[in-house]
Image (cartoon, rainbow, N blue to C red; front, side):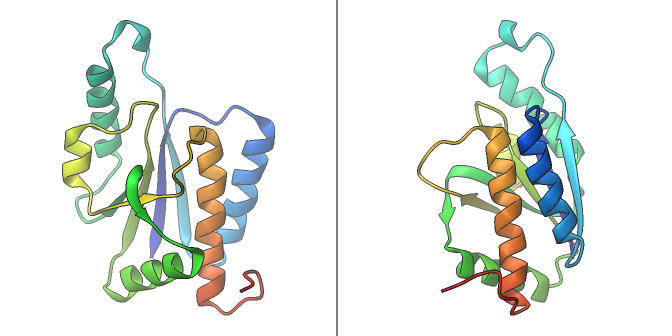
Length: 157
């Protein structure tokens, strides 16, 4: 199974870039992983929130293939603990999903078109984190999920 992580905007802090790269490197042992950064919109300050979501949504959907299983990281999504998230990944693999596209949206969330195309929503927490930090947190959880499935000693209960 291939994993795509689609993100709006670019990670700018070196320590977060290092964290992302560390988990992307670790994940290569389990799955093909591709991180796709969608550039922030030019002139966004002159646009309404709905126009920003619409334009970002169009750019996001261009990166998603019709056969992808699309999952949004969304504050209103399902919360999982790490073991349940690993089971969620296993179910997708068992069902024959070839590619899961996880999407971290922009500051205003997702357009209705992106919500309508998605098959699932996941929330990492009730707390709010910067979009750049979420990338590291989420990549670590994907790595943790695969390590649980493989019976590695990374996760402790």
